[in-house]
Structures are given as structure tokens and as C-alpha cells.
Image 1 (cartoon, rainbow, N blue to C red):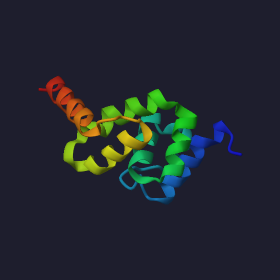
Image 2 (image 1 turned 90 degrees about the vertical axis):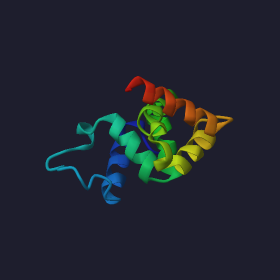
Image 3 (image 1 turned 180 degrees about the vertical axis):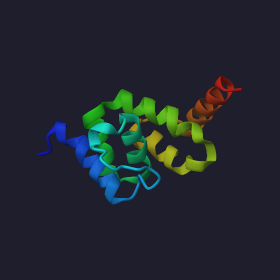
Image 4 (image 1 turned 90 degrees about the horizontal axis):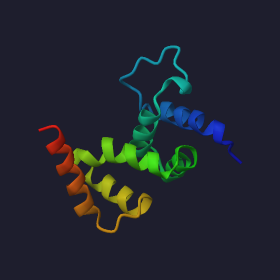
Amino acid sequence: MIMATDIKKILYRKLLDEHCFWSYDLTGVTHEDIPDEIIIEKTLLHLDIYEITLLFKYYGHPFVKEVWRERLAVQGDCYRALNRFLALYCFKIKNPDRYLKAVETKHLKKYA
């Protein structure tokens, strides 16, 4: 059984193994130094469903959904298939296309 305190360390290690931080200088950096939002974003983008379920255990559904909505759902066509999957499977959104379009539109208006 995985302890909650070990989940962020496990996710960080897995992200390192998958070379998800290729553009970062991580000299002397530990899992505690990486912002939670980055761990969540990179896990949703690059890891598998098992690691995504660990996200929910460690961070909770509302926080993971907030990070997803602010960082990935606003990306438009770039992550369309991934966002549709996450909306349906992880967040139980009944009409993901409509939801994603609304999130994108709200984001664009915010920064227009």
C-alpha cells in the first residue's frame, strides 16, 4: 500500500524517468521543490491512468480539476483528444465538447 506522503515522490520519479522535465535544470531539486500544479499538469499529459488515480488520492478531485481546467482544458485543439478523455473519464463531464469550448472561450475573453 502506498502512503499518501510518498505519492508526490513517486509521481516526480516517474516523470523524471519519462524525461518530462527535459527543459528544466533539476540540479539539486527534489520532489518537494516542484510546484503541485506542475506535477499535476505533467502527470495528466505524460503518465498513465494509474498515476492519474494517484493524483486524485494525493491532491483531491477539486484541485486536480482546477489545474486541468486552467492549464490543459484551455489549450484548444492541441490536447483535444486528451481533454475529451479526461473530461469523460476523470471528471464525469457529460458533454465534454461543449464544456471544453466554454472553458476555452472564457479563457480567451479573460485575456483579450
